[in-house]
Length: 484
Ligand code: GLN
Image 1 (tube, rainbow, N blue to C red):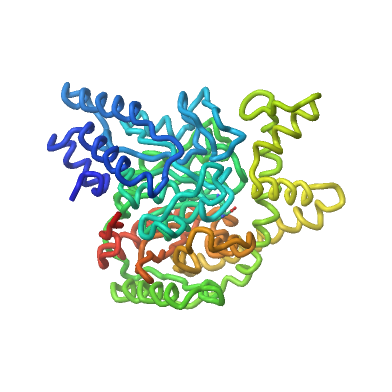
Image 2 (cartoon, rainbow, N blue to C red):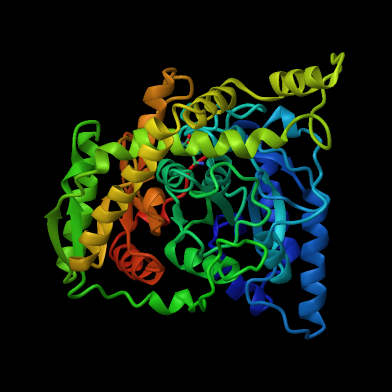
């Protein structure tokens, strides 16, 4: 296999044994970008010269016997809502075109310190609002398994890059499913960690009570390795939690004997395609054959998760996005005649339609007279959703379900914004509850990947890795590579 098609743990072994150099790995990925990026459009910015300089630094350090991280020299894609010092960070929005942050996200700093090679900034739906990357101001990304299909979103550039071999692994963010749903669509592994496990400092905020950064990888071992690199407390993010970070690879034991899995009946209901249902049921059988116990459960408030999310997330977004006013950074209108005009026209010109719609919904939901009816009520429902999970986890180690109701749809096929939002019905509940959830490949329908979702109690990432790895060991889905 070409270097770009290998996993990070495979490359790490080769790098440590000095069978390959970081420069060779990086050049292999850059070569792949040169031949496929025109069709995939995974990136907003490819940082070729930075990547080569970082790779050379790693090679020099290794050659001179300096102690370097075993994962040093692996090319990574960063979703373009992560601030990177000196590298343009756009959130795929015209309003941030040309914005070069004066600081880096904590996750970016951690990756830099471990010798990561930054290959580029990956495309996303504008401000991470969407499920297909079609809301990007710079054009949609394409699904490497079928170039006419959507890669999912909002981290669709990151997942497309990994699936295409245009990055070895990637970082995404997940507010309502934006790591897991595109991971499912692109046939890769994506984890939304427990809220507070990974620092959000330097992640451009969408909905702060839901946003979480996580890994996008070719297999479960890589996801555990990348979590080792990015997790941990950060005094610059007050919602990050003081708690030791385990070595997540220690959970990759391969055994699931006696583990209890809850299968929520609401996640197999109307709207979930028969192919997706069947693949996930087969995956459950695979785990049961290895000694896991699976039982049907109910999470009765699941149906309220989507409408609740679409009050809370826009409310937080309307507040977070108030800072884009054309004054200190980002797009500034050339047509302003006074300062109010400056704010209005800069925002009118800079934001796309989906972002504007969410700002309006959020502002409305927070306005005097409506606050109690919408925002406060949604917060109460959020508690009920969380309680469903708390009760389930009294009896079950993890919950198993599909990640998305269907496989990838064609670009341009879903024009109704409400239908687009229905993509996230199965991923939003985990964000509401703050719990960790992973998606991994479990089959194909018409040549397009299907995603299996596992959810665990807070800080149950180890349980997710244990089950996901056992499943992966028993199946072949993670070995597939998209032909481009
Ligand atoms: N698709 C959902 C939305 O549009 C979730 C996005 C996300 O997780 N960032 O809001």
